[in-house]
Amino acid sequence: MGSQIDWLELFFSSTGRVSRGPFLIAAAVLISLAALYEAAVGPTTHFLTGWFVYPGLLFSGCCVLSRRLHDRGRSGWLAAVLLLALALAWPRPEGLIDYIAAVVVVWAVVELGVMPGEQGANRFGPNPVRTVQV
Image (cartoon, rainbow, N blue to C red):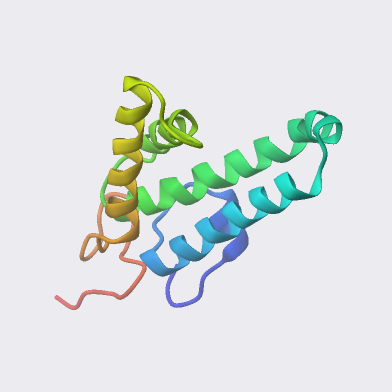
């Protein structure tokens, strides 16, 4: 990706890597869009339009998560586990499975939002922050 971020590619492609800053911005955009949608529609409209809105948000969320997981050297398929854990723990955990899912969500926040990406190139592509001189 270099120094320029292709935002359309970030939201609609799961290949490659993305650094922490653009990941956090993209996550905030997706969460804001979901919150605005929830606040703007009523229960009847929500049932009808949710079939179109949520798949798009889910797809974009998977793409963004996958790219950040790639930057950490992990498989993008873990995005499915993270989104399932988020769905189980939201809005508050009630049973044992929900609390385990909440721990997975906390791990994901630390792993993806706090930890830096792998130095240099990995199997998913070059470092999106800088090129390492050898």
